Image (cartoon, helix red, strand yellow):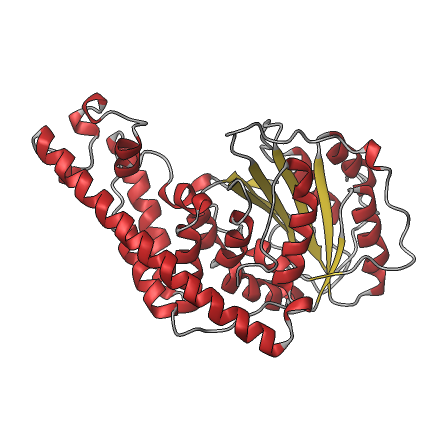
Length: 403
């Protein structure tokens, strides 16, 4: 097993978009487990922010290329769909990418993180290669998702694994933990496991259905290339521009090493965004304007937000820990810069919200006209999450996902 450092979280979120597919609770399935066997999740207290922790266990062999590309196009709309809950949750995502023994790697584990920009950058480094000789190392990947990931302890967290693949597990590896044992551990820890079959392999279908049943999850089915709503809109370029302008309002404080590491991460994310098409950046902007998106995209030690919200007093920050543009300025001048950036940020955010609403209306009309929403990956993921998160007190009042 290889656990990637946070700075190279570069593979993750793809799956979120990719996993969603057409939900199908098939006739003739084994009976679902007694709900009383599943740990009861405590609803959040008044004013307490809920948490969504999602880990995607993804087959990254050659046959999965189309699905991975669909994920690259949809990561931010999936994040926006999750963020649409009331109350707005904190979103953390992780990944276990897997192939098989003898390939370039067996598994690559990316731990749960709220840094979705880093995960976005990771997605663009993800390629589908290897494979061609099913089965794959599903048992190892699923066990690492349940046992090696840093799942949180909050009682109000929606913890979920999405297993995504098109080939069954090796059951002849003697040192593997068989998936039924892993799923029993997941149930004890309050982690739901959904199984998403890609393609139409009959040898995979029965096992994926059993994974969903034992994991207190859902069985979903995707076409080999995914099935996402992908429509360009007249608002995409404007939202992409606003997203870049919003990024420019960020100022980070901390030690020289912390600021250097942050700068490197921002530069890597910007390089990916510079190569991304406008519709992807429009989805990112829409997420950035949400309650969940604000925290996710600002991250830790963002000075403007910290000072304006009162979580940090400016005078308590050592002068050498301030961002370079503020070093050497008087206290009044520093406050003036922060206030100016805060005002600019809020004005941009309001423009994003207004433009995003028009984009959403445009997309809903297009999707309705095409009559394809019911079977889209976007809609089916939304339905699955909405149903499963209900026990936490999370409510998705919209009747459709973000596209």
